[in-house]
Length: 511
Image 1 (tube, rainbow, N blue to C red):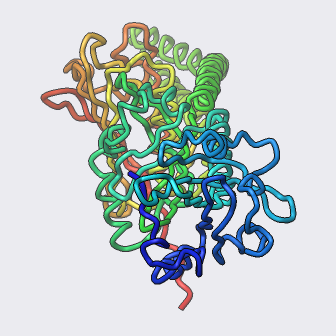
Image 2: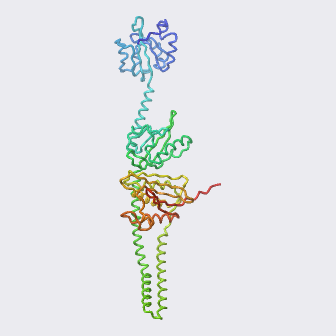
Image 3: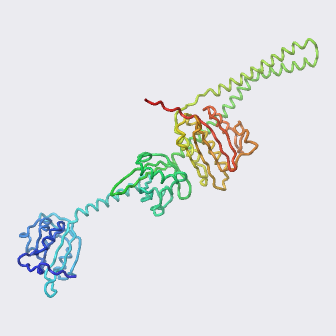
């Protein structure tokens, strides 16, 4: 609606063109708003201090000048066009380029309001100008930064997820959508634990609460290998790095996720190749050993046979003089038999002479690597892998590669024992048992056949149709070489394989 002229109301238009009474105080209270009064022809007849500071002209310099001098050259000044045509709809606001006294331009919000005089006729106008150059530059900078950030996030190979301090997802990058199979709208506002399999899913909020309560950093700022859960229920290994940011009273956590599927697939293929080479090496070694045994044992065994046959022939003659010859022949046969035994023991010692390359290792790391290598490439999306490593277990003193081989063998056996037409669970646990760590691999498969359970760790004993029966035998050899033991336990559902390995000795303390 039209604005009544406060100058007229104050009775001081002639004496004070910018206003009287409380009006100057009101104008000065708006330092970032230049307030200018125009007459009906658009000439300046009121100029405040804020206008002088913004534009640079004094009241004496600008008084009586057209308002067009306040606008940048070439600007489509629709507001002033309305003044010229007297077509102003009482109030209009626009964003335009204005001009300083020195000729430089700035962007401003310009508002023009009609002033009603006596009888409702338009007597003049209020022109209010607010400089928004800095605001627009800041907004443009923020927009450019956002565009740049989005461009970077769209192109980097790592996925990014932002959560708040309650674990609720705030942002889900395009790469994360591809990696997990969810659209952003499906996950934003939900707890990030939905992207984790058990037992990490149940433990996540507890870990987050503990950090918020204690401030103790256990994973923030460090990259670690974890397992993710896709929308279709399959799991995959990835490297997770978490950062923390605070601002404006908020705290958020940003997770950068690097898919390890290809890398660990290559590692699994390498491990498979190594396993095949090891198998070929074992078969070759067995052939060499068989040839060696045949060669070394041929002479003593032939001698034993000859002595026994001779003794038998002499005893059948029943001649009195033959007794001494028979006794001597049997003594020689016994000596040759002992020599054969020594040959076998010597070969066994030769085979077992290899030393273990032991080192202090975190058992959890060995289990995680074995899980990744044992499951990559297996067509078992319905099988869930669970891990529960007691923190009190500590470090172990083992040959890392050999213990991984044992775990991979047991895990693959566990997976293959579960029928393909139903889901299953393979669970790996570890706990302390005196000076040893006891590791257990449990499956929900068909269980052990009673006929083979007693000799399952013997050479050539196999539950598989095409198995050679060497895997569990080699596992026993490895575990016993570490000073531990391995055994199997049938359960109402599935089978549990247990083995023990030595704990690392405690580090010496500097008192």
